[in-house]
Structures are given as C-alpha cells and as structure tokens.
Image (tube, rainbow, N blue to C red; front, side, top):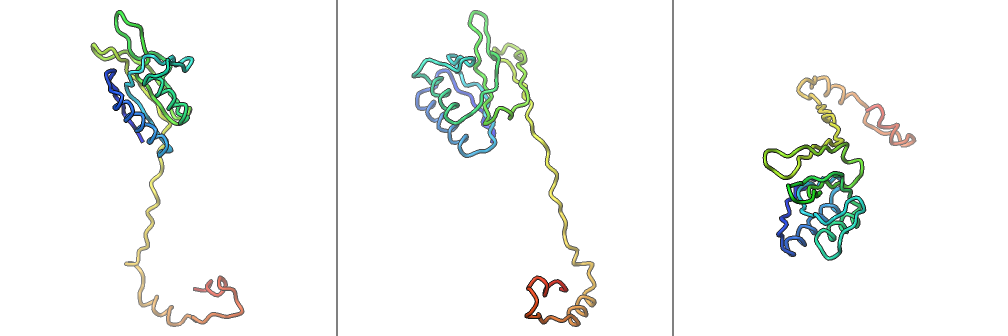
Length: 167
C-alpha cells in the first residue's frame, strides 16, 4: 500500500488525529507499506528521535515507535532564506530494507522543498503459467473406445492409489 500525505502546518487537532488513525490502521493491515509526503513536523530531532511532548510531532514519533515503522530520510528537505533547515518530507516503511536509497535533490523552480528520489527493491514476478487443456484436438472416437475397453472394477486387495494408477 502506498500512502501519500500532505499535512498542513495549520491542521486542526481533529485532522491530526484522523491522520494518525489512518497511518496506524495502514501499518496494522498491510505487510508492505510506503508512506511518504510533507508531514510538517519541524520539531522532531531525527538524529536523537526526540521531540517536545504534547504536539503532533510527538504523536507521530510515538506512532512510528509503537508500530515499528522506519523513517528513511536522513537530510533536511526544506530550507528557506532566514529560517533553519528542517526535515518535513518523510519516507516511512515497515522495514529498514524497504528502501534501497534516497537522494535529496535541489528543489524545482522557487519551491522551498527538496525533491526525493527513491529506489525501491521491487522485483518483477514472472507471469503465471497459462497452460490449458486442448480438448478440441482430442480424438473423441479413440477416447470412447479406450473408455469402453478399460476395466473399471477395483481390486479390493489393492490400495486405492494402486487401483487408480491404470486410469
């Protein structure tokens, strides 16, 4: 499952609770999970995984710990003249090996958010074998002849598997 998030820095407490519930539900219901987007969580110190309590930032960090989720972005993703760089754009999965690499790339145009280039360890699968019996090409006369000449009686002294082998 892929979940794309944009959380406004002006989100209400109800909106924050709804987002946290959605993320918790997704984490519990899906074996494979990729959550990414702008979470607007400037207070989280990702190096120490610490944050002042009582905020959405704190609740999000607790959710990641409670659900054993991994946040993969290791660099700041937003910077603007006159303000401190912050890591607002996050990539979250269920395992440390779910992302092969992340590159933080310069913003497009006048944006103050970096681009994230992800490499995922997705392997293609082979198409299922589509074998089909071709009954249209069978010799119906020969099939009926063989069925009529075959002994259909089972020997009670033989095991069931052995009795059906000639069929």
